[in-house]
Length: 260
Image (tube, rainbow, N blue to C red):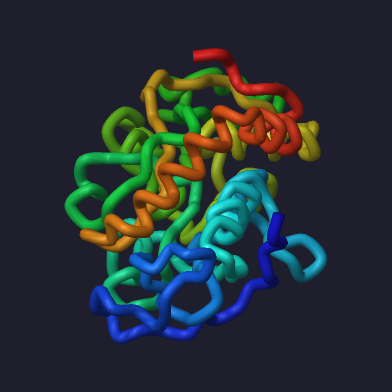
């Protein structure tokens, strides 16, 4: 497995379908924005999917994209960027990145801006708060401050379902969770995977509710970039068939995924 490099600024292409160079490994149809590297735009931190530790970006998504980079015969380089530029397609159109693994839910609105791989992870929204807060669901948040992350499905869910709460928007997950920890917000909504990971270390806090939103994550690419998308889908399928997906999943979540 090719290790992900530390956070860096990737070289930018001209934003068209040409990109900066051919991929290695015989994948002549795949054009990359920077020669010799697979540039992955993501929004940090989003532990355990992608986060920085000791100057290196690691996580579940990063391990999966290392396999794609290995298939292409290049190295993965991770670019930390605001999530809105990813899901809007602006980062792809500007030649900033080849793909995005960002714990990103496949939605119809995002499909208008970017193309998605096959689903690779099931998720749902959840609510986190301080233990013994008395908050067990959205109905308990009337008149209270509720943290959300900008441009996420959690942001959408809160605005659609948390009537009476004051919605407080944060640029990234880290800032949102700091607000929960400091008491600046009474609770916060985000994907269940990252919240359950957070409360493992922050034992004064707990996930008190999940909401059955039936979400699935996908890897994002520029609209029309079918050559790269085919490689991603092939690697994901082979990884699941070989059992490597289960091994990576257990490494980051402590258990194997539920059987479909």
